[in-house]
Length: 250
Image (cartoon, rainbow, N blue to C red; front, top):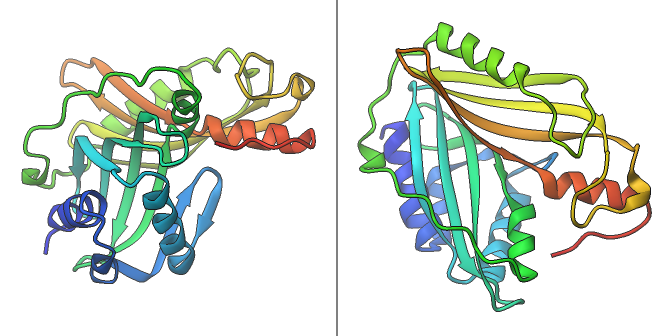
């Protein structure tokens, strides 16, 4: 089985068909799953997935981009579904970075999803339009890493200003790999909260925290750079509210 074939089973059989019997066939018992500032193991991951399918019984995933160098794989996607609790539809984006055992099972997933945007939709905001799917994502072939593309992508990320709700601060790139001119990165931006985020308390202004972001940067042969990012604003707001003694739920 190739890495891409493994992801096909992950997307089609497990995620879109909700077939939980597939999990032990495609996910290693030593699996590590990182999202929203937390890393969990196999058993807790199973519980998390079952909870997600309960919250969104019709949850499905659409692939917008997928690339691999044979050792690592990145997938840019959207999930969509109707909340069983709110009875509202939502569409939210994500970027996932995978490792595998080189044979038949995933060993790690580092993912961020726009749960902040999803929460706003469940509270009444209209869902965004679904981006077009990638044509034949599971026909992708591995491409060699491109160190120059990785450097250009890292420079691009480090050159970006902080978002308007956060002061300028240290940016650390924790993960970076490429396949041809496409680069996947994970980075953490530190800073003080400046205000302006729905759901974040006003008395948290000035509080120091961080935002984790997964990004896909495409460096064309012409030198043009295209970037897609998914940041963990939900986790950021949750930590701000916890620091002020209040909750943040969806």
